[in-house]
Length: 334
Image (cartoon, rainbow, N blue to C red):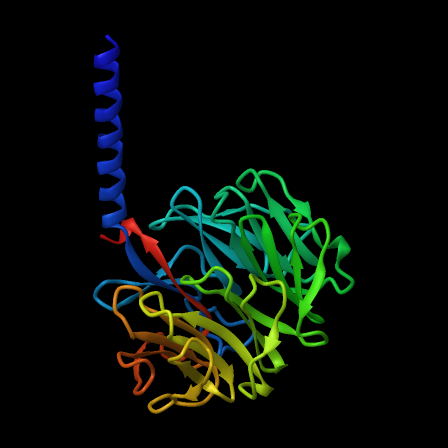
């Protein structure tokens, strides 16, 4: 019997491993957009399709869920769902197009960002105009973490195994005790608009600011320093690391447009040939196609480059104001 049990355990493990590998292989990176069509909108008129869009394998943009005028950020949540930071709360949107559920109450609105801790999928955070909140039970209950922040408004939040990096109107703040206490990590006095962590180096972080330029941390988010003149006196809205190349990074801004680094953030070059303007709100590298980059031009739609931003062509959502582009692994896209 012991020998049989050992054989059975090994056989069961191999079965589950094969199943997990099959599920992993079936998942494809799918591009999602938080977008609204308001360029020619007149108050009182019917709102054009706005909210969450998914780009199909054929390159078509499909509107999902409710017609929502104010989705600002998204993240992959637990149980094959997206988490959407919206004007009316945090929304759980099951994939591929399940019923939406608002996970927060009427006491909190105007969410700005959402993040999931990869070490604890049922633990996720959102930034809002009065601080930061966390759930550790998949959205059933929430705890406010912004009490220790002197300035409550928080625009960006990221989590990495219990360590939190938050960006507000007075700099970048770090918490090592799950939000009970915070300390200033850099960019003092600047409004932070976006924070991202490199998928290649967990200790390399970048933060985009309003008029202060780009700030970098290479010590796991403990300290951030300015990287130069990129974006100074302008607004930088988004950061994208290329999953296929640790040296390739893109930054989006109002004025710089799209700036690319090919040496892991040491130097930057603006690449806007083919874009309608140098006002870009979001960027995203395609994990399945090295060097392919998507960019959202302000109220001009989504553009695509197959050569890391050297040239651009219109890709879709023409006329849309896109607040966030993000690739999510999605097995339902098959």
